[in-house]
Image (cartoon, rainbow, N blue to C red; front, top):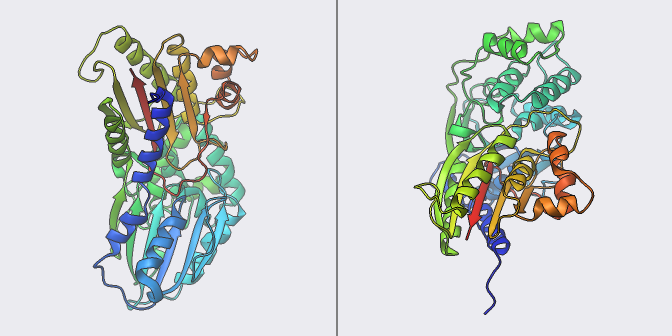
Length: 420
């Protein structure tokens, strides 16, 4: 029998951990036993919106009066009976983001205490579901979002600013539903499952303040006009009493699934962290240093003897210093490739669970001890491409990009280092 290669093992782990966090079954479990009237309004936002709405329709059937799915371009998988499907921009909102939000607000504008709203939320909702606050334009939000994304700001900081510029974020959507009862089913893509950060918390009381939003603008030197500054001064709701929320999935489940898969394949797994949030280049260097220690035989609790699998999850950040193309997972992988150069039987992959990494068509990168050599064979200096934030083209040259397409889920990123 032919032995699998270590890269083939990595491919199996990728497939199995993503399959384990698809939202379909968790949505069914969250709705089973829950009492709904006939005539439920269903609003699904985020990258996993289609899968979540499809599952909800399966269990609720004719009880769905009407529904809207608001998701990223390319993430819809066809019609769902009773639902209007709108695709919009991510990570930068566009006109469809505003159009979709307007359609949702029209649908909930005259609800009463007799009505129920099923709110299906997943990551990406911050960009996909948007209505600028009065005095703020879509162009303002696009400019500010672009600046924040390139500044290296953490997602909680970015969303703090976005909440204070929006009429539907930071608990404001719940207020738009009047006295209707909202049941929110949330797929978390935020470290610590912070409900007021996931999709910018449309139906959850906001813990951030106007003052904090202003401090973030100053901290990252964000250019913002007078109307934007005035909007930031308007406080978001601190009490939301018409919404019940349940979280159905997170990066912890993603990492646990990766560890189980690795163990089945004969690797001793160790989940290092489910809250990795450093700079992508540094995280890649760290994983490379762990690999070198393992290959030297310097083992420890979190770096056991090979064959072993070191698993981590979270969301790194990229500080843009160049004008290249890539994403945080690709940057982790390229950085690690430089650190593991020349090592045998070592593979690292870094993967976005939603199937998209940054503004690219790749989900991440998978690298080994020969990746850097393959890049150089194409007359490319991997160090220069890393410094120029051009991880996509570097990994494309070596054949080390991961392509999954839209997965139908979104629970942060997973990084796995395999050594044998």
